[in-house]
Length: 461
Image (cartoon, rainbow, N blue to C red; front, side, top):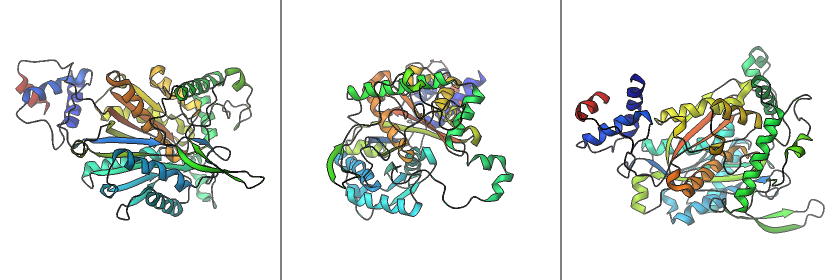
């Protein structure tokens, strides 16, 4: 009973923002308070200060150095998705309070300039500011969370969270010398471990076999190929007109990229079993069961619900909660196993309440571990494939996942209410966010009714 009461208090905290339920409707408050057992709760348009997503798009993701974007400037990746947000919503770009772009590998000041340039290409006026954010692999999701937090705080009513990475233009490398002090601090030293070694550490420590990893990779390619063939990515992918340069002749060829080019429809366990470990001689992490090095971008348009309603914009999703946590750098891949419960709990939910998960497949080892540790239903996770098939352009992945998740939730309709996005983060962290399908405004269907609702409501408050 004590657990239920505590969860009811959490629910009421989220149910009663500044423009909360009408104070005279004590019966509704009591019913909401009693929803603790299954954590279902009512949401409707009265929550005008909810932060909602009205549009989310991405480019196709392409193989670094040899894919469709190998000769595309980073700013030319970001500009099309920013422009799409304006064109597809008919939003006046001058109304945007800020554009925050997650990016990892590009030099800080240069990438910030490229993002500002991309905003101009996309048609934003000089009055709209731009900044970047870097929380490694969660940078795109962090950008979305930062915009949501700023809107909630009242800094502005409309903002864009985006992500960008050209791993062709900016390969992973350490520049400059390393502080020798790092040798005296084990965890600091582990921040420098190659990501592949952390994958091997997870596999070894938690008993994730090579076969389990290869099987996860095969499933990722199978689902991504099926999603592509059935056109499920068409609503989220913005075609990008670009060029390819022949390295031998220098000849340029113009074409349009609209399909992820790293998916292998015919991937099999037999084929993957032939691949040699990349990071450790007797290891299990291969090029086939790790995320693809990719180029791409994504962008998400957020605003207050009241603003979206006033503008007549359809609500794709509602941003509920975000959590970033720290874990041991040596096994950084376990991050989602810690971050997901934190974000779900903050939303007043249980893991069983989540209908869909987008968990970044940085490595099959950590993906399998997190899935098993949280005892998640495999049928709910990465239903359209993940980073092992689609790709993982570091700073763009979070924004890509938002687009993929929310469009899939929209397709599923009433059978899909809550979704979670999560990823592990280099140097030992995890991040997760909870989203709700945008058109949910149903009555609380599982609330237990009580006679003395006024007293109960008072106790819960």
